[in-house]
Image 1 (cartoon, rainbow, N blue to C red):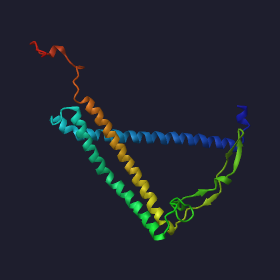
Image 2 (cartoon, one colour):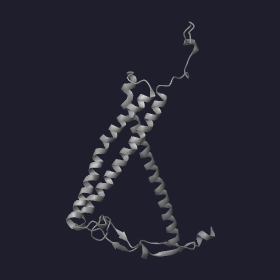
Image 3 (cartoon, one colour):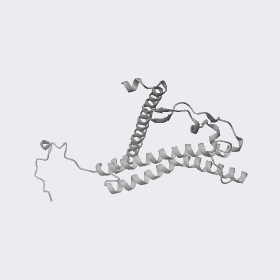
Image 4 (cartoon, rainbow, N blue to C red):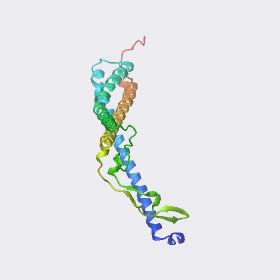
Length: 216
């Protein structure tokens, strides 16, 4: 308690900021986890829709053929869903290639913050010269650093403006498709192990046939 009272106002503010950042990180992680779980559950249910009819009608009556049929359907679904994000990423790559050909520069940095990259659209701070203060013997940043570069539009960076957002959107979209594919594959594996299994969990001996049955 005595040590805490000796803290400066900057130290106390720094502690509060660190705690808020940790709490924010946990909240974001929790929501991301819930979103991933919801997507996995939804896609797993879609696999049941894919194989429901062939199982119910008796077209497929063993685990091996169910896995083979479900895997083929899953591949087709992945191809169908991934076409758009793949096209977006190809278009983004083509735009960057065209940009490099026009400018005769194949070493362009698409994240450049001065002129040629998408970094021109964001704030950039000079963290090396940020104000610092002693905190329990450690030298930590105590205030916002000076601004190094403010957001600005650069016509020389049009290749990066098309490439980076296109790859980001297409890449995230494609990863969601892959996640859905994995969820459906896992559900198919579980279904193939259980849907044709015979169980005696709810067997009632009183409802069994009275006549003796030859086990052969």
